[in-house]
Structure formats: C-alpha cells, structure tokens
Length: 468
Image 1 (cartoon, rainbow, N blue to C red):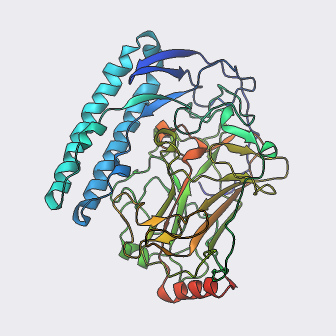
Image 2: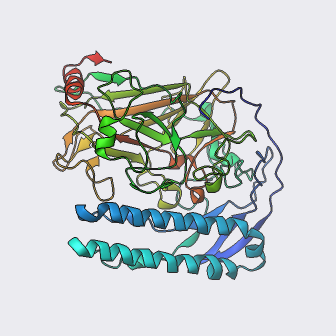
Image 3: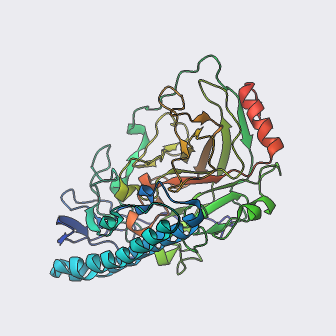
C-alpha cells in the first residue's frame, strides 16, 4: 500500500444531488443527497443547493481536564467507545437519507435518541471510574444528547467565500469533501506573520530526517488519545520515525522500537492522517477499519517530501523536552467542535506565505500541495501528558512568549509536501462525521529522543546554529 504507483487521471463526473430538510436536534438543518462511492466532483454546482449535514456530539474528552492518573487509560478507552458510537450513528444516518427525507422524525427517534441513551451509559461509566480516585465531574451526563449540524455551522465550512462556491459535488466516500472546500491559492492574500525576534532568542534549528513513510506504515490507532483501542482514530495515519507505534505501544515499546530516522538517537513517533487522491481508485483498506469501513476511501498518497524541523523561541532560550512528552496539534473534530483548537495550515509550494485553515488549496501547474503543522512550544514543566492531552502544553502568545509559568521548548514544525494533480481531487482521512474537512487536519508527536541528542538539539537552538 505504501509503494509508489502511477496515478490515474482525476475523474470528474457530474453528480445529480437532491436535498431535503431534516428536523432533528432542535431545528431544521440541510441534508445533502451525497454522491455514491466512486463518484467524483460536480463541475457545475448549484449555488442554491443546501450544504451537507452531520451528527454533532459534545466532545467529552476535551472537557475532562482533571482525571486521576490511575484511571486515565480506562477513561480514554471509554471516550473511544463514544467515538465508535458516533461512527455507527453517522453510518445509519447516511444509509437512511431517503427515509429521513420522507419522515423527518426518523432521525430524532431512530438515530439521535438511541445514540443519546448509549452515550449516557458510557458517561456514567466515566463518572464511576473517576469517582474511584478523585472528584467525579459534575453534570457530565448533560453531554449525552447529540444534534444534527449543517455543514457550515461550526467548522468554517462552505461559506461560499474565497472562490469556494457552494458546490454539491461530494468526494469518493460520499461524505465529502465538496468543491466549496477548495480555493485557488493564487486568490489568497499573504497572511503569515511572525513574532519579532528579540535579544536572547534561540535562533537555531535542528532537522531530523525520518523519511516519507516509504515503507507504508499505516494504522487507524491513536496511542495518545485512545491507548489500547484498535481503530481508535477511525481514520488511517501515516507514521514516520518509530515503527513500534500502534494502539498498544507502551513507553518501553517505543524506547526499544526501530526507527526510520537517520539519526538512531531519535526514536520519536510522528504521525498524521493520510491524504488520499479521490480518483475512483481504492486501497487495500477499502473494506477495513480506518479505511472504507469508516468512509475513508481513495488512493493513499506517499508524501513527496517530509521535513521535521525543531525551532527555537523568538524571545528566549529553550529547555529540553522531557522524554515521552506527547503533543497533539489541531483538532480532528473541528468540523463539529468549532475552530478553537484547529491548527490546520494548507498551502502550495511557492505560496507558503499564504496559509489556509478551513480550505484545501488548488495549486497552479508545477506547484505542490503543502501541509504544515506548527506544534505547541510551551510546556508546563511537569507533565508529559494531561487528561485531555492538551493542557500540559500551550502555544506562545503573539509576541512569542510562554504564559502562566510555562517554559519554552523546541517547537516541532512538520512540513509535508504532495505531488497531486491540480484541482479539487484529494482529501485527508477523518472521523466519518467530520466530512473530510480541511479544518480537521492534525498532527501527533511523542518525543523519544535520547538525552544526548536532545541536549545537542537544545544547544543548537540556543546557540543559533543550524544542525541536522
């Protein structure tokens, strides 16, 4: 699956889409009649057609900022069960579009209410787990109900701006993306601003070469968010660096794992959702978890280039990262959660002073698609992880300073380049209900540098040297 293949010409087929209004979750929302699997893009979308709908459930994990260490893994597994319930409910939603169009109450009575009841059981389990060792969360049961969400309500979706339009064409899986998720990069104004570099800054850089996943290591696990849960991500990840990473990998497994990194002192794991070409072709996972079973289909693209660079702080020296520090950047559920934690950056080679958060770029001939992840660069000085996998690290403020007693650490910047045909013909893997939106893009990192190499990195950054 990771081998290099000759790409097919991007198929473009007209999609005849019908729409219906669905009553559910407290209001009228729009529901697309999606293209069936194997269909491509609508080259002449109707501007009056409604946008897609999805299932919107409160993100319980994001709210659990205090979970006793002894039950975190158990709680994470219960949270993964909630994700699985949403996936099943979304599939039922998608399979019953015609029935819902005829009977708007079907969604409420046969999909949303049963989902609420299932979620309530899991939420009660989470309360009981936390109650064993600490103060249980209050009123968490209120997060059980889910609603139906119009495509553009939260995630910065199809607003028709920036040349996107309001297209009805839907991706190969039938649940996105659509034409309005793309924008011509040449129409975007430069928008990248960097903090002013001040005296005392750590001006150096350290680059680690870990390849492009040429050996095709994929799985739909996420050992940070859902340890011990197969298919915890419900989408496929590319992995470079540590080769022991799956849902069941312990810190010891990672420490002993083989690495694709040229410098064997870096056994860190770097992973992100795969990008697929929506060309009518399928992969070996077309009927597997993380792939077709989760509505992620299309030809997986091996990156043309992957750059993993660590940069310093514009205002201070940096301190070493602790070993096994875990960092997630971006939000895989941004389409329903909103943009609060979204950190997607899409662009094209030659135009990287223009970064897109909620649109995929259409690059001109000769230019390649670029995904950039700038990870959090401030650490609380104590924890390698946190209950919601976010609060132990933070972004620097606009001036480049760490706040609230956090200290500056090397900032990982991942740059991933793809050679794909020009036009709206690709998508990142996502949770099914997230509709393959560009705003859901995210990256994951676990630091498994040995102490000697980490010291060298810190010295390079603090002394203003460029090292590799």
